[in-house]
Length: 282
Image (cartoon, rainbow, N blue to C red; front, top):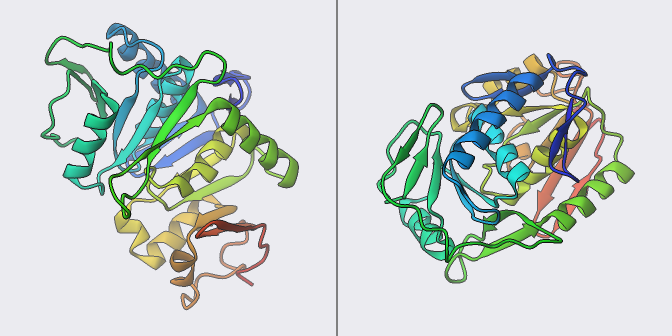
């Protein structure tokens, strides 16, 4: 099974449905379970009658349902806005005000003291007031917006960068052409979903029908725990910043003998991506 980024649909539903898709901070999903949970969020969105093009805020940190909610948004062409729990409260409030988003998907298990017309959790909808979508619809008929990711705001107010289906299609064409990714690959995620670096492994694993390992803050801060998790799930594609990868150079267990599955590094810094560094952990 895969989630085809180019048409935003699950395909080949009976093929490898029992294969691991997400190794989340709160447990794992097979591909069949991911599709089922995606359908849960679709049903909740449809219950609220959310129009095509209205942005959905997704709040959490490395939960397996974070990706289920993302795929639900993509199927309905509802631009999703990823908000990790590491994002400051004031920034979330600004993003809500800028986008006019009426609906929050809250996967954190904690209350977020911001007023939304409706909040969807992993188990239910809480509808607090009448939902008005009139002034917050960003639909593009021929090139729909898939997600909106906000800049850091270091040079002023945070700005929402709108990524369309055509942009993602171009990205997948590059990934398919330049790299030999396969359904057996296991992508290692370290960056928060609100950081654009995470798009590399997120979209690639979905499109190729592969697997992704989501690592929360506690694991990312513990080099031995991180290495053990990569080893346990057979991580093959590492994606991170240089500073994060640098922390592992002095870790004895971080070598090709201990993690033989690891074959490709994507290292991103500034505006330059260096990729396909094979056998770095020799």
